[in-house]
Length: 241
Image (cartoon, rainbow, N blue to C red; front, side, top):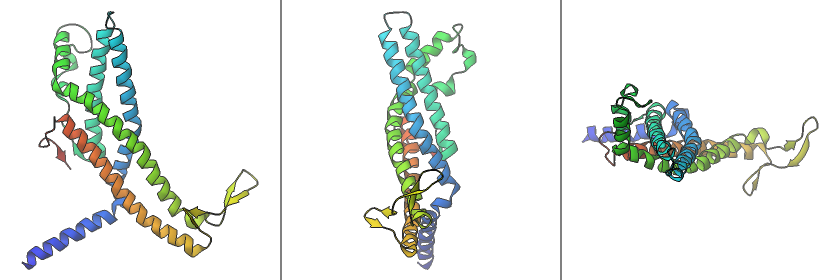
């Protein structure tokens, strides 16, 4: 009984330590890099896929449409492979490569028409992972918008709160000759004294801890969502380091 209580207490303390130390953990900065990349790459993936698909469909009546569509699908599968690697490198979630990438070699004739080229195209179009990769582009686009809003907002608020003791006395604009533009305020609260500024900075420390854990959770949610999607809804193949 006492052993079980001690174990539970140790587990709680370890969890609390993990939460409080989030801003200091190396993994947190890997997660931040992952979210920053997601904010940019998700937009690029979506624009690239929509452009390629639209152009390919529009040119289907010519000889160019089909190659463009096949190239778009191949690039989309490559995107899925890149995302699998990024999730492993930055977040610590190991995701198996899409089936088409893992089972196809460039030497099979994928790059230039020749022996095996047609088989590679058929394999690309019929592979389940190819169409799951298309779904990944849509999911990544949604996460990119969320990351684009949440990441700079939380980081900006954190920086503003922590910087209060250094900038609360006055704000200045201009180069050479400074011009006062107003007192430092946090919402409706105008910070006018050092104790007030230190109190705001103390609140900023708490906010940083909360923000770091929220951003860690968002990064892991994104990586795990992609992992489950690429595995067709199965979770047994997803390895979490």
